[in-house]
Amino acid sequence: MKKSKYDKNDIAKFLSEKYCEEIVLIPMVEGQESQVFSFQYKNRDYVVRINPIIEGFKKDDYAYRNFLSSAIPIPKVIEYGTFDDNHSFCISEKAFGITFEDSSEITVNSLLSDITNVWTSIREIDISNFTGYGKFSSKDGNAPFRSWRDCLSSVLDKQKYDWKKVQSMEFVDSKLVDDLKSIFMELIQYCPEDRKLRHGDFGSNNVLVDSDVPKITAIIDWDNASYGDPYYDIAGAYFWSTWLMCMEKTSNYWDETLSKVPNYHERILCYQLHIGLEEIYENALDGDIDTLAWCQERCRQILENKKIGFAAGHCPHKEDGDITTRAPSCFPV
Image 1 (cartoon, rainbow, N blue to C red):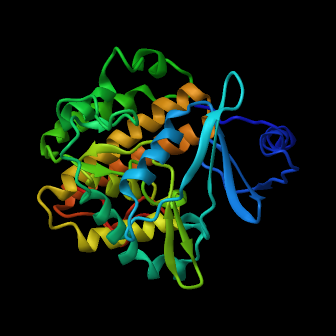
Image 2 (image 1 turned 90 degrees about the vertical axis):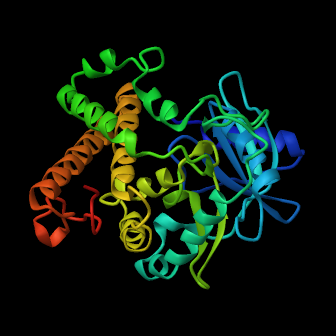
Image 3 (image 1 turned 180 degrees about the vertical axis):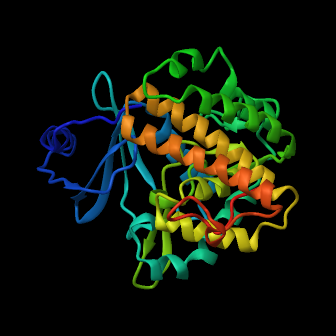
């Protein structure tokens, strides 16, 4: 989904008319899907986001009302609604801090145990009153799939994903996609039917931190929150580790502290391949050729490291001839 590109003045006019006073917008670091600005109203700081889909904003409100705790800081959603015929808006309280992604190496290192504690707190939230696996609805808290493996394998569902169209596109490596599909389905047997709450896009620019203390100040963007194996969120750090320093550091830390759980390496690899398939599909349809190229190369690296690991009989490290320049400490085998 392509992000909106409204002029800042148009958004400011919308808010000024809503609040009956002049609103001045300040650009903020944006996510992949929303335009984001901060503003002041009656001496309080707020954030406004513009997105084609309102469900993500409803999920943020749902998360605030149901998951907020001292261990899981979540900004309060003030209001959401229609911006125009094609887009929605969301106004929320502004959380202090910068993104984990923009933090210094010193700050990232100091928060590795804290971010792990937040992840643990999220997966320990009681969801026993709700049903299903996968992304849950903000309307009733229930999710659509009968099992976690059904949820995972839906990425190959021909009714939902037009892989024939995507694999015929000029910049898509069709053989790579077939390899990813094949190995992903081989590994899915190792994924347990755990049904826990997961953020869905944990870390990076969805964690805000106070770098002076340092401490975590907010967990934002709950659009992809779902029920399933919480270690899928862990796999996200592995996948993006060669893109972002914070993900490299986090995946290294988690490799040292979490990898003794049953079938850890197989699960993390399976989830990385699932992430890769989703990213290739979405970026191909969006026409984001640069990100598509990076994701395909990243998937090739993951598959190559898997082969190296099997050949050597151990999990490859960067010093063992890893082909990436900024790789995590260990790729699953």
